[in-house]
Image (tube, rainbow, N blue to C red; front, side):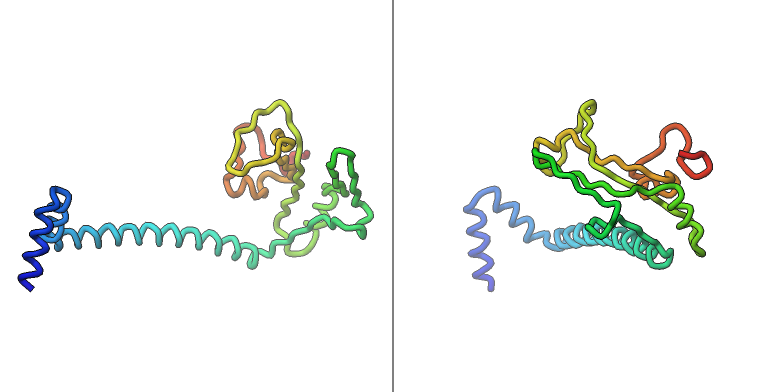
Length: 181
């Protein structure tokens, strides 16, 4: 074994300064191993914490849906819906329209026993020429460059965008059934 060690050290001395650093690593492998284990443990703990937070958020949302009794009413985009209309244009655009959610519909839903709140919203894709949008990571076609999703809501207090903090009310009052449309 001494012959192998002596040969290895001879090769290291002949290779130059970079191998001297490797030799120092071999001589101080206890400290190096402790530092490696410390950084490995810190990295694992940070990644575990991020993973646990993400899993907690997902389970919280699913628990709210199962325990809170969330109800979703969507538009039936088929020919069976008497209010559904589809218009095709020469340039290839298609417009879908249907009967929109009204205050009367929301009030009927709220009369169902056990309902505590109702979040009614509708979203649509609109072209806005006066706004300069910043480009994102997903490449889009030229015809959609000035388009954005516009969301109409019955109540900003119960809307998912406001509840999650994605959208924040800067000034004015929340839209709710007390202050009207």
